Length: 193
Image 1 (cartoon, helix red, strand yellow):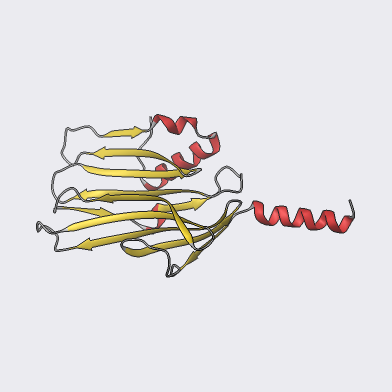
Image 2: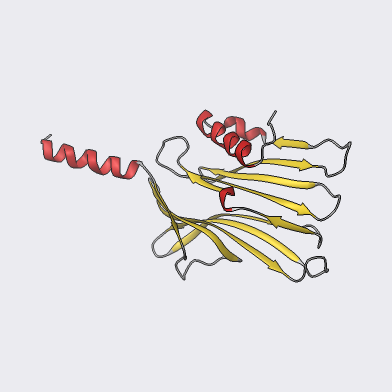
């Protein structure tokens, strides 16, 4: 093989083996979703071009029967023509005295196992006003399959909390398991057993 062809092949494979993740401010108009955009990533990886993003909606007045607090996260991938929804995370408040809370640091996107394909995790909580239990969730996608860790944290003295890590997480590559656990530890701070 000629050196120039070899260099070109090496350059092209290295260019596309490391995903490009960039934060952007608006989605293409043809991407259909619900909610108000809060954080959008445009990703180019070995599988193509994608948009991963989080939306939130708050309708009505807190504490009234019409109050609704929602969070959604999406992955759209480029197809010909346009984009197709690959997955969607959706959760909402169970009652009018609970809000869905989320921070920008709670949506993590990256290539955790070095295979050139981006993974993601969303951490958020259902935060009640009063003495009801708080629910914290980490929803992660690896190869477009969902994995979750959930915690129930009591707000009343003498009650024990509970953390549930889906058994399927143990089937993930070790690097991905470690990254999910690291995200949980950094953003939630509750030990996993």
